[in-house]
Image (cartoon, helix red, strand yellow):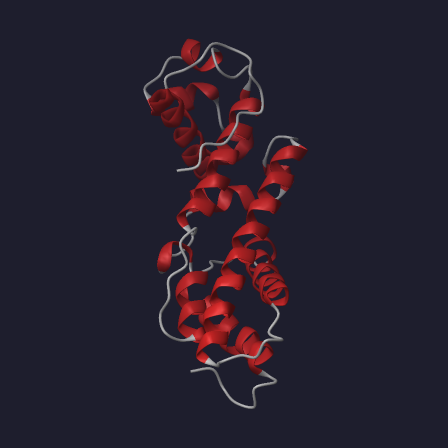
Length: 208
C-alpha cells in the first residue's frame, strides 16, 4: 500500500505496525461515533496502545485524525488502482466503478469524503483527498476508453475528462448530498442512464 507522508514530524519514530493500528482504530471510531465523540483514550484502547505511545507521534486529536484520513484516502486509491478488463465498455464501467470490485462502500472508506464539519480543520486533508479522487477517476477513464476505442465501441473523440468528471460528480453527490451508498445498483443506473449514452451518442448505437 502507498504510504502517505505524515503532515508533521513531531515526536519520535513509531513502529509502523503500531502506527497503522492506531490510525485504523481512529478510522473505525470516526465511522462509528464521529469526530466530536471520538477520544484519544478510546483509540488507544482499541489499538491496544498506550496514550504515551500515541503522543510520541501526534500532539493532539486533530493531528491523529488528519493522519488517519490521509491513510484512508490513500487506501481508497490503492484498492482501486488496478482497472479490470471485462470485454466491453459497459462491463468495464460497471466492474471498476463499484468500490472494491463489487462491495458497497464501507464506512471507513467514506470517511475522507464526509463534510468538513465532521473532521479537523485541516485544509491540506481536503485538498489531498480531492486530488486522489480526481486521480483515480482520470486513470479509470483513460484506461477503459482506450480499451473501448480498440474494440470500436467509441470513437476517437470520446472524452476521458468528461467521463471522469461525470462519474466523480455523480458519486460525490450520492455520498455527500444524498448520503447514499455507491453500490452495484447505483453504479448500474449511473452507467446505463448517463455514462454510456454520453460516450456512445456519436456511435449511432449502444455499447456492448
